[in-house]
Amino acid sequence: MITVALADDQPLVRSGLRMILEGEPDMEIVGEAADGAEAVALVTAAQPDVLLLDVQMPCVDGLEALAQLAATTITTRVLMLTTFDLDEYVYRAMRAGASGFLLKDMPGEDIVAAVRQAARGADALLAPALTRRLVDRFTSDRPQPSTAALGRLTARELDVLRLVARGLSNAEIAADLFIGETTVKTHVARVLMKLGLRDRVQAVVVAYEAGLTRGTMGS
Image 1 (cartoon, helix red, strand yellow):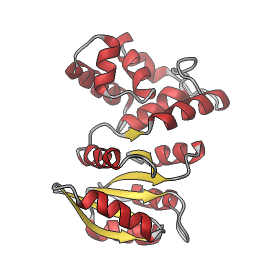
Image 2 (cartoon, one colour):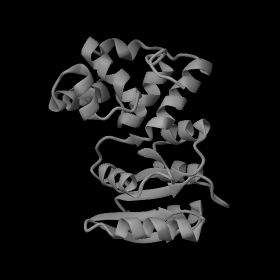
Image 3 (cartoon, helix red, strand yellow):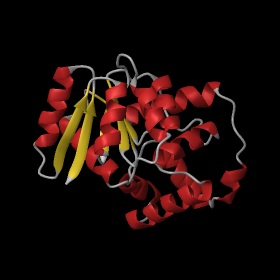
Image 4 (tube, helix red, strand yellow):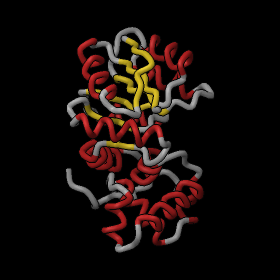
């Protein structure tokens, strides 16, 4: 059973999410919060597998709540959920350790899939439309960091990293590179290990900051 907590200042949004997720046989809602401070307290007490956390809330917003949780040893995976698809929010959430960043108008089945994926500790999620704009914006106006660590990657691992940064799934990467999905998983694991990264979201950050995605994506 996947335990889930909901944090959003709008009761109707929380009710909608609860309806979507409680309809799944493998999910249980363990609590709701109306602001970031309540979310931190809820997660500290219940330690759910996944927290759906709104970005903009009164008192303590979602990004501050995420930062507070990241400073603890709690292993709850956090999915940022918002109607505001602003790039700076995405960037800050990724930097703070979010396991994914999804839009509230995504289909219910996509939200369910994201919760399951986050609970497994597998591929972190970023809505593809957000990934494209995020990469376009931040590779153009942020200085590139040192890429010394990237020198430890093989050519194939670099190919995989570029495609991860474009928001492709393992299956899509396998099709693009004409290799097996299991091989892709192995490459992704090695990329994360060599670069000292926690998940795919951090890999996206590294890829666009290093300029690996320049010229590969549209706006």
